[in-house]
Image 1 (spheres, rainbow, N blue to C red):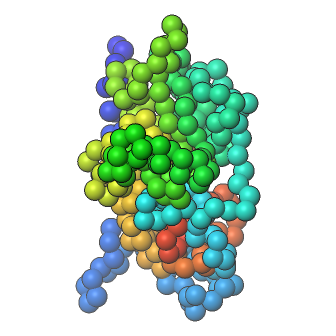
Image 2: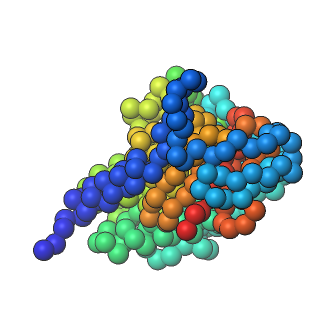
Image 3: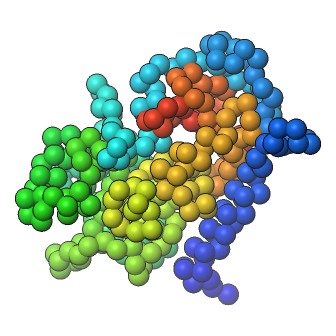
Length: 316
C-alpha cells in the first residue's frame, strides 16, 4: 500500500509533535506547591561565577563558562528584525552556493552566499525534495546581504512603491535576516526559461511542510505579521538547526515567539527535550554572557541577539 506524499508529511509532523510534547518537561511547581518536575535540573551552586560545575537532571556534567558579549549576537538562533538589529562580525564565514550546491536545484548566479553549515543543510533538503519526486525547478535567488545592499533594496522599494510598502515588505538595513548568512529566498525557474514567484504550493508544499526535518523554517507567515513586522513570504527560509526548527513547527511559533519561549527552560529549571529527525536533544537558556556548557559530547551554543544564550546538547 502506498502513502501519498501529503499524507506522509502530515504523519511525520504528527510523530514530531508527539515526540516534542511528550518529552517537553512541565513547568516548575508554583512556590509552596507539591513536588518538582522529574526533568528539572538541580540548582547550580554559586550560580553566575565562571568555573562552577553542575549536572543537569539527565546527568550531563556542565561548567559555567564566560563567553563574552559578542556571543549573545552570534549563532543559529540570533533574532533579527527591524527592532533587533544584526551585529555584524569582523569576519563571517560564507560559501558560494554555486560552488557548493548539489544538482537538485538552481542558484541565480555565482554571487549568492550562505554559511557553510547552512549550505550543507540546504543541499540535504533539496536532495530529499528531488528524491521524493520533486522537480528540479527551485531557484535560490537570494542569500547573504551586506548592510549597504539591504539599504539599496529598501530605498529602491520606497522609490518605486512608497515608504509604507517598503516598510511592510522589505527589512530595514541591519534588520534583515539575510545579514546572518542563514537565509535563502526561492523562486521557480522552468525549463523554458520562464520564472514565477515561489508560493510553497502544489509539489512545493512538501518543502514547506518538511523543511524543519533539515533545520529550516519558513520564517514569515501571514498569521505572524504583527510579531515579525514582515508580510507573508513563503519563499523565505531561515536555518535554525533541526531540533529548533522541529520545535517551532510543532508549537507553531515564529522565531520572535520561540526565543521568548526558550526562557522558560533555564539551566537551573526544567529543560526542553526534543526528539527529532536528527536525534534527541536537551536545550536550556542562560541569561547574560556566561553559559553552562557540557564538559563533553556534541553541543552548540547560540545567542538570541537580545539578552542571553541557548545551549543545545545532543543526548544520543
